[in-house]
Length: 495
Ligand SMILES: Nc1nc2c(ncn2[C@@H]2O[C@H](COP(=O)(O)OP(=O)(O)OP(=O)(O)O)[C@@H](O)[C@H]2O)c(=O)[nH]1
Image (cartoon, rainbow, N blue to C red; front, side, top):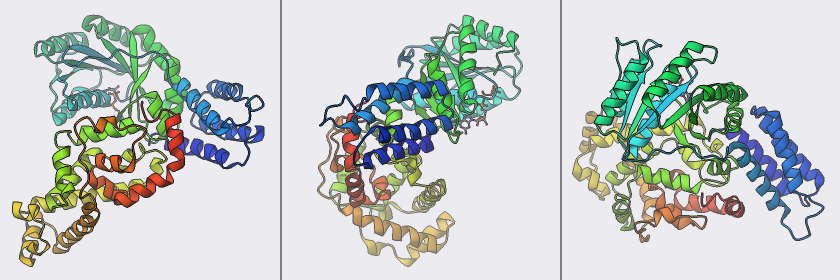
C-alpha cells in the first residue's frame, strides 16, 4: 500500500487508543501525538498537522460527551474526516467523456515522470474501452520521442512525433489534428520538462496550450520533492490552466504524504498516483477510499473494480460454474494464474481489504510467487487439451511428464512440483462445490454488508487460495470482525 508505513503508524495509534479501558484526555493526547509525529515524519506541512490536531480536539470534547457516547468511534471518525479534508481540495477536475474527443496536455518539471504517466494514463483508459493516442511535443530532450514511441508501441497505442521537427507547437497541433480525424477520444500531449526559472520554456508551454486548446492540463509532480510540490504546482498554474495533478513515484517515498497534501492545498485535485515504473503501477486517487486504506479500513469499491477489470464479467459466471460443479482442472488453474498476474502484486490487492496493511507480504515473497506462477504457466503451455481438461489424476503418466518437461525446457522435478501444487489446490477448490453463482450486477452491489461467501465468489479462487482458501478468508474476516464496524463508519464500504 502506498504510504504503508504512515498508515501502519496511524493504525497502531488508533489501536492503542482502542485498547485503553477508559478514553480520557491523556489517552486522546497520546493518540494525537503519535499521529502528529507520523504525519510530520512523512513530510506533511506542520501547519496542516497543527490544524488537524486542533480541529480534532475541538470536535472531540471529552467533557461534553455524555456517557454512553462511543468516544472511540467519534475520535476515529474525526481523524478520518480531518485526513480527508487535508487531501481533498473540494473541487473535482474535468473528466473526459468516452467517445467524445478530449485533448489532455501533460506538463511538469524535468524528469517528474510525464512521459511515463502519459502512457500509463492512455493505457488505463484503453483498458476501459477508450481510443487514446499520444503526441510527443517534447522536442527538448533527445530521446523523448523514442521513449514515448517505445512505451506506446508496447501498449499498442497510436502515437505522433518527429525526429527532425524542432518546433513543439507544430508537432502538437499536427498531432492533435491527426488524431481528431482518426476519431480518437483521448488525445494526450506530452510536453518538455521545465523549471519555473526557465521563462522561455514557460512561454513555449503557454503557446502549446493556446494552440491545442486542451480540455484538461495535468501537472505531473514527483512525490520526492514533498512540500515543495506546493510552490511548483502554483508556478505552473500561473502559466497554464492546470486542472488536475498526477503525483508520481509514490512507491517508497516517505515524502509522498507531504506532496499529496501540498498539491491538494493548491486546490488542484490529485487524480492519479504513480506507484512504480511499469504501465500498471498507476492508481486512481480518490480521497475517501485512499484514507480508508491508509487507516487499514479497506476499499471495497476499489477491490471490486480491480477484480472486474481483470476478470471480465461475462467470463466470471462460466468460470465459477465449473468450480461450483466441483470441477477443478489444470486449465482452470491456468486461468486463475492468468488473472492473478493481471491483478498485480497480491499485497496491493490485499491492502484493499479492511484491516490489512500491505506489510503482510514482503516484496521478496511477491516476486517469488509471481515467478513461480509464470514457471507453472510455461509448463502448462506444453500440455495437450486432454491433459488440461482432465480430472483424472492417473492421466499424468511418466512419459507425459517427461514430454511436458522437454517441451517447456524445465526439469521433470519442476513438472512434478507443479502437479503437486495442482493437487494441493484441488482440495480447497472442491469446497467451492455448490456455491451459488452470482447473477450479473450482483458483483458490483457488494457493499459494506459483504460477507465471506460473497467475497469468496468475487475473488478469483487462485487469489483466494493465496489467503488460505475459504478457511483462510473466514479467519481473516473473523479477525477483522472488530474493524467491520469501523469500516462502515468510515464510509469505506460505499465510496
Ligand atoms: N519508481 C517510479 N519511477 C517512476 C514513476 N514514474 C516515472 N518514473 C521514472 O522516472 C524517470 C523519469 O520519468 P519520465 O517519464 O522520463 O519523466 P519526464 O517527466 O517525461 O522527463 P523529461 O521529459 O526529461 O522532463 C524514469 O526513469 C521513469 O521510469 C513512478 O511512479 N515510480
